[in-house]
Image 1 (cartoon, rainbow, N blue to C red):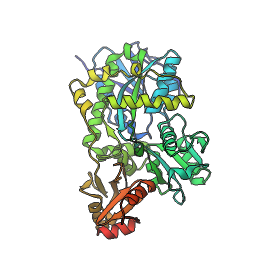
Image 2 (spheres, rainbow, N blue to C red; image 1 turned 60 degrees about the vertical axis):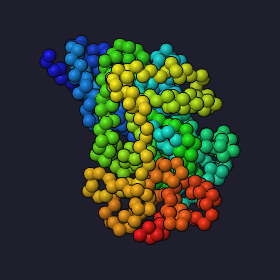
Image 3 (cartoon, rainbow, N blue to C red; image 1 turned 30 degrees about the horizontal axis):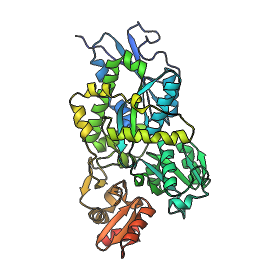
Image 4 (tube, helix red, strand yellow; image 1 turned 60 degrees about the horizontal axis):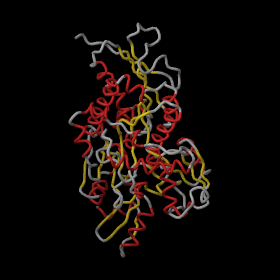
Length: 448
């Protein structure tokens, strides 16, 4: 059968679309189907359903392979957060979108409320302990623990997973998240600027903002979201009417997502460079989250423990009066990704995140160099400082990857142990007499 070409177009943010979900495109012959994808280029744990997928062209390729008599036109729309994607989906203007777990729940609630139901059809990036969200402070801040936030101004994006982390972390610290702090509801970029200007004391945000600000020297970690030990993830949502009308198209998207996932896992450095080029983010920051041992793990399977975590998130949104009850079980629908992946799906469902590891990314290298321990990494960095692009080490308690030069280091006898946040480092020191925190320079010297 003759291959049918695809016309690929891009549209400006929020421009009205000529067609979605299978109607003829303006000026077309009636056989052109426009598929509109909403994604968040800078929310880099969605790249396998957004930025990376778009750059690789896999979705267009798989649509072209359908040979169903249609010409497909893909429109990619880039957003800063999940909320506008949900607004466009419930208006019937976006067919498939990707966002974090809390926005996914709002997506489910709004879709049901407005009679435009949506379904969670796959997962992109996840962290089983919650390490995708971090609370940071200014580099010179004297705040060292969550209890220090009492009475302080904290910026976050209400309704986001980062806000969920903030609420839960404060509750565990014995602070009322509604009355114990002054919470400012701000977009990530606005909150980052507020932190730099000193108009807020801390910022709770999702990937990639904490890592970016730390890398730039504009922030330091106060709280590692993985301390909650609760899964957090990003996923793909589709309009139910679109899925039913165009199941083969949705399956093609999910097949393409799986192919992009395979590419990311097989070529993590190159994938980081591609995402960096498309987003303007430093590749070193992208790799922190999406690398071979990054904070995020990627596979499309809708794992039961992620669904369980989603159910636990509902209470946070309800308490903030952002949603009512949400039927998570009816929202989750993995039939399309099961069909798209076939026997691979069962393997993905059982897959576990790779173990945490220390890595060095050297200048000009197409792959990273791994080390058996953070101390061995430090010894190598000490001898090759001018040739190092970035060095990564996993938190000794949570396993969350962090930049070696931004970590809090503890010397315990011959051991050199990294931590994302000062509180976790101090907890270790308190439990291990004779250990103490040391500077990064001191740690390098001890290692060499």
